[in-house]
Amino acid sequence: MATTPTNNRGTWNSKFGFILAAAGSAVGLGNIWRFPTEAASNGGAAFLFIYIICVVLIGLPVMIAELSIGRSTQKNPVGAFKALSSNKFFPLVGFWGVLCGVMILSFYTVIAGWTFSHVFVEIFTFTGLEGAANVLADFDNGFVNAAFALLFMGLTIAIIRGGVSEGIERATKLMMPLLIVILVVMAVYVMFQPGASEGLEVYLKPDFSLITGELVLAAMGQAFFSLSLGMGALITYGSYLSKKENLVEAASYVTLADVGIAFLAGLLIMPTIFLAQAQGVEIYNEAGEFLAGPALIFQILPELFVQMGGLVGLALGVSFFFLLSLAALTSTISLLEVPTSYIIDEYGVRRKKAALYVGLFVLIISLIISFNTALIDSIDFIFSVIGLPLGGLLICIFIGYFWKTRSAIDEIKQGFKDVRDSWFTTIWSIFIKFICPIIIIIILAQTLMG
Ligand code: PFF
Image (tube, rainbow, N blue to C red):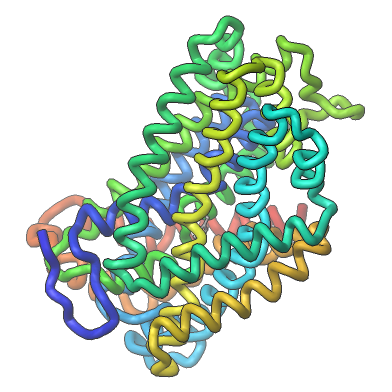
């Protein structure tokens, strides 16, 4: 179904193209790396269970909220808040989103660079070029980090310069199916390995006694990060969407794709961890804690691939890191699109120039991070752990008490004629006005106190 361009900002070519692009933004390192490692360190199935609740109760309503703001104004996050209210505070919320986009992209690019460099680490390891593999695998080597961050940012800028339908939509239409195929093939292969069932059990058999306050915090943070919420990415993507489309349906597909792929990634990673342990790979540190985070992805898994040896090890190793790189690229695109659309709309700069300038600006920060990787944790804490839920909270308050849910429902109605008569209107309004803000405030307060 082709959409009608309403201005020269660009539009999605089809609803399917939009869903793939938005799912591409959502599906990223957050799904294939962060979700399985959070699940592994937080009781497996218990985490999965709470995560799904957070996605349904908070993620989906906030996603619909962002899309309605974007589609209604057809503007970037700053311009959108300016267009909908004369209140001077809310454009700052949009600006906070743009800033979060810039800062998350700056460290995300470095980690994405690591995933891409590991494609070569695997090749070098299996072809006996240990020396070259060790150079690339050394995260303390700022020059290697910088080179791969540069490469990744270059690819991202090139896609964004291509525009909404010719750049973002075309690239994600190519990458997302490839990503799904690699993930499914790898998960099926790993699940049928002897010894994988222990991992599957931990992942799928919930032990509710493992649910703690900390687990709930982790699950909600993960939901915001994974669904790309709270920084206006979906305001921006929604701004290119035709009035004919049903926002509730589109948001549901994107959410389903994101959760589905995170679930699949868990089916791949959880058994893999146990396979690795069975092969004698150390999965706990000296303090007896589970080796989550970078150690799991860049140490435990490659060791397992080496132990598997031969062509199978090589194929698994290369596919795994290529999969991570693809997932990362469809997300860096959306992270760069937010500040780029801000510069295009608010300063009248042409897309090609805007993407280049913003990309180079973010790259400077990425280069600093490349030589000081310890900065990643603090930037992640401020701009994603706190920044995204805070952005989501302010978006709910804006819709609930300033723009009003009634106006948002009018926008949604354009592509969903019977929305007023459906249960959706009442439930969604209650969620946006009360339930989401209250839950987010409690969780933010707990995070800050912790
Ligand atoms: N959702 C992405 C992931 O799961 O890796 C990360 C992300 C992309 C966060 C875009 C925020 C965003 F706007």
